[in-house]
Length: 375
Image (cartoon, rainbow, N blue to C red; front, side, top):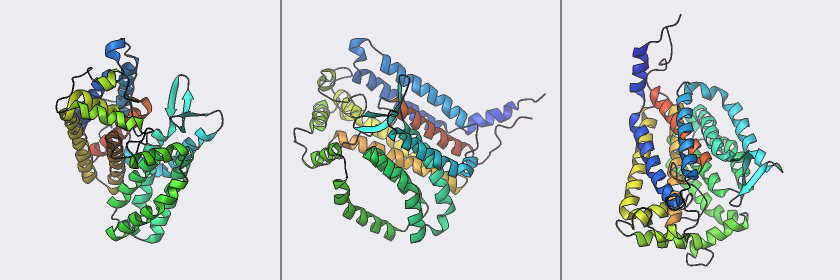
């Protein structure tokens, strides 16, 4: 009969990055408190969304526990399978009767009473398989043929997302890819050329955008437009909050339903109105700590594959935080990107938790990969 080595289990617990765990938990708890105000649970007594968000977080913890059981190094061996599965997950929503349209994008499938956004799961699977490809081509990363190969690898994902159309998520995938490629040693001269090319192509891309996406872009350059209602109300909410805010559950823009999509896309405006500049700074500091911790883990990874995975995940979080907060204050166009661990949404929260699980896995195995063996 096999005997459990409790010393090894104790070493396992000590090897978990509790700093990252504490940071993520703090962001979630802070967000859950704000969500209780954004959903008006304090007035209606209906805590359904709060319970759902908390349930998703608990499921996320279980997912993390399962992820920690497997050695992330073995995932890279199945990058081709992951690639095919990822493409199919993005394509399945395009099938009539299967895909469900929400917020102008056909990105969802309905499973019973639950709406699942397949692109959220694909953020993770794409990161894992693309990191493997970057790792295999890292020595020639500045070769034009290699760069074209990598662009061709990610192109189907971007195209499928634009067809939904979901520009915000497509940009997330670009950031995931860029952070990996840049960390592999992309030359700054090549980077400048890529940025110039993107600037030149931007007007052409605008012509192929969906009507509602064009409106969002034009609103960004014309913030006082009547069609820019969401951002105007968000800026009023944040501006009225002042230094200390109006107090939790006391924001007029929030509580009187002037602020749209306040439980998801514009939840940062609720923080600004009710908790003020101090409340916003606390959230920004927590996210800064998260990004800093992720970069540290990427640096300490035992191999380049782990580094690229963490860098891709870092790119995902960096863009989502900048984009979500930026659009609430009028510095970025509205794209419907959620604030990680804060915005309401099971798909988004579970994806974020799974990615944190992968990062914890990489940190756990930076020295020892045999923590789970029994004797």
